[in-house]
Length: 317
Ligand code: NAP
Image (cartoon, rainbow, N blue to C red; front, top):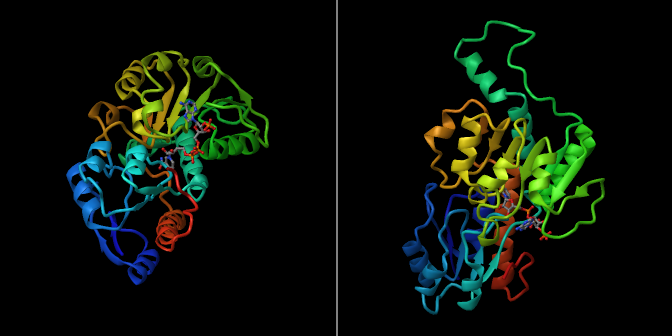
């Protein structure tokens, strides 16, 4: 079987892939265009793609009856793959849930703490040689312990974020989610998202991307936040109306923002990078050695299961 791996992955997992399949891999970080996707679907039996690779319905349909029968996505989020179009073309798709939950919750907390405590701003000041010494009134931030945490999307990652807030920072937790959840810690469900946005001191978004959640956090949602709300997004850039968020940050209409994802990433608007009241990370959610290895292993294991005629453990379509 011919396997295409669309980005460099962990060496140990790559060695397993090369042992098992006739393996080709793309170098560099640039995602596949729709035309490249269509060509690859005709050329390979299996593909291990990731974020940004454009498996649109049009790209899949253009491949007709594709040679490719399995896509083992590297990542839990698969909004770059039209899984219904894939199913229609006879292609099974899997993802990599659970193995990245803790790493991504940790990045959410990195953003919560560094936004609340102005860590990015402070580090920039120090490196610029502008720090004048300890100042009782200098660079005061937002106290985190005991504040109300609002989680939008109480799935695997949302729960891991909430768990850290509840047990580690004594935070009351409120959440907005499509369905009610049985949770192993106290958390109050609020069914009106705008109400949650007015109640929570710190809001974290952890829903999946895709048609159902595009601009879930739109201008009206941002307006429902308070002047001191700290807003964090680790989900997908498309979930937030970025321009409205920038307008609010520029006007100091909210307290600050911590972002790991962007509407048109890797493009980040200059209006955003010019602001001091936000902390900006380059999509680091799952970026630990251990997590990225586990993700690569899970993606490959799903492809191997398919190749051996077994059920794919993490199939999504
Ligand atoms: P998950 O377990 O499927 O959780 C998603 C949660 O969002 C579910 O509880 C779901 O509700 C809820 N939800 C879905 N649509 C909703 C809507 N329209 N309104 C309200 N709630 C909604 O997924 P996960 O493993 O936690 O991952 C979540 C997302 O995080 C991924 O899809 C990915 O996009 C993103 N992510 C980002 C990074 C990063 O590097 N920044 C890393 C990993 C993941 P139900 O319980 O009703 O299904």
